[in-house]
Image (tube, rainbow, N blue to C red; front, side, top):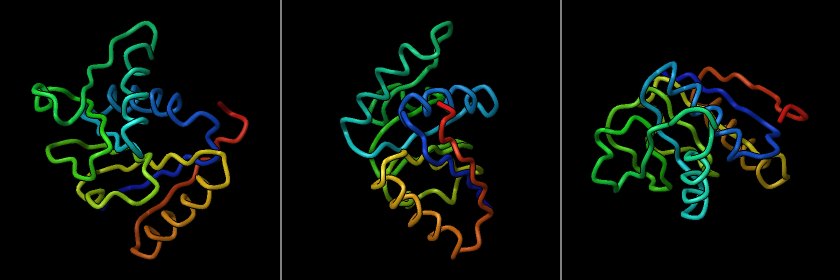
Length: 141
């Protein structure tokens, strides 16, 4: 069963995800990131080219011709086929495909709309019996 970690009250979700993806990539090898929309996909894609500053994080979008060979995929498309152990969610809804991943990281921003959507996702997973861990990130960015 998928283990789910909620990172709440994150002041800068994209920068946080860049750090989280780097850590997950080093630990697990394959990582998927579901963003909220095309603009977030583009912003995170650009950020991953510069973060972390001293290393390269191989990533691309799902439609890329090299997606099947790339360990980190970033996209807003609601279906991420293919292997990966970790899914990072920036979408406001639970990903319809989350249960095929070993771990799910739910990143919740600090604004009220993000917190409200995060509470709904938390309740969704809890009602289905998933193990949930919460990490309050207020003041830690």
